[in-house]
Image (cartoon, rainbow, N blue to C red; front, side, top):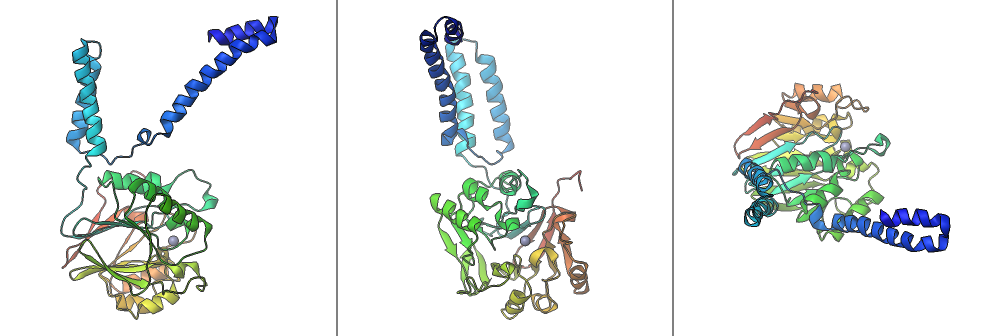
Length: 370
Ligand SMILES: [Zn+2]
């Protein structure tokens, strides 16, 4: 401030002499702004942690109150207050809370992402697999990042800090939009894709995954793997179909996940032609994640007869512009005696597959907007 004032005053006398205090003021300003930028760019400046356990929240609040009370006391006491704060911060950052999951069951949760899909699967051994992460179309011109603001928040609330797998069914914004935030926030061990779509947004995501050191794994029909005690079978897409699929929805990665005698079929946005093919591949499942948000182009009677589900879930946005889910699809499900749940009406819906039975559970948190 003094050098800036001096520069202004000297400016009336001699602009050349005024340059000296002006340069000093400029350097000081650059130093202040630069140190803020430098601190902000450090990785430690943006640490994402899951919601801590209640006892840690209470302990941290006590440590904070203690540090404030002791701040003006003798240096030893003030130091003790600071140490208590440092210990609680370390505890929150380094020791992850126990995820709120059930052991020995396969969990399937349709997260409410509005119009789009995001399914969290937790295996009987606690492995986590996230299929899609919602997203808004470009024409929505919204600042909201469904991955960062909805799916990440939900997972942190569940005490989840790492994911084992993030899978993307296909390169459409309502499935892919939130994936970038999931890769950055949860550093999955693998990123699964089906078809290698030419979509520039998908190519960008693949670059991001590689930059973060996350292996990109492509899966095709016939792949069969074990994820933490759950059996995952890929039913679509067919290998070698890259670029030959006329409808992008039919590029969808379709998977059946089984634990014991219970199973779920995840269709992505698969439509008629894919459904006809997967109807021939033993798609029987207790729970059906309805294809393409309940659009009339999916859930064909042939597939429904083969899957023969007891439960179905439709991930769909309230008052969406597409008219999803279509009444004819709802009628088809009703006529087949399928108990159908919808994220637009029920919010997040969890199904527990214990190997024998499937138990649905609705989100207990009340939502004033519903
Ligand atoms: Zn979709």
